[in-house]
Image (tube, rainbow, N blue to C red):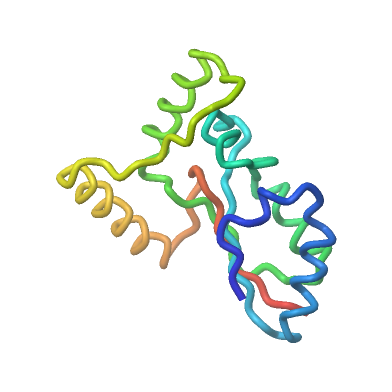
Length: 144
């Protein structure tokens, strides 16, 4: 089962994770992604209705309380982290808006290709090592 960018939208993730655990057979696989690092909180999070950003220390117990054994927990979007961090800091310096607008759009083709190449390099790196920082977290867990 997969939960890609879901948990951060739920007020109380424990009942939701209990429901997920009921759908995954014992020994079954769960892959979860969530936005990472509260320091990155910005208008973007408000506009997409996030309730929180996670760290390894805050995501791990959510999964374990639901009866999942973590196989892997890593940050991702590490190689682009300096750009994300700079953009989010700049956003906060401008001040959080009362009604922020959704700010995600596909960049111009050459930039998009470069970003895709960076993410592909990171995907290959993630096969070998956990990444120390990033704007997202990915967890791979098995139901006990």
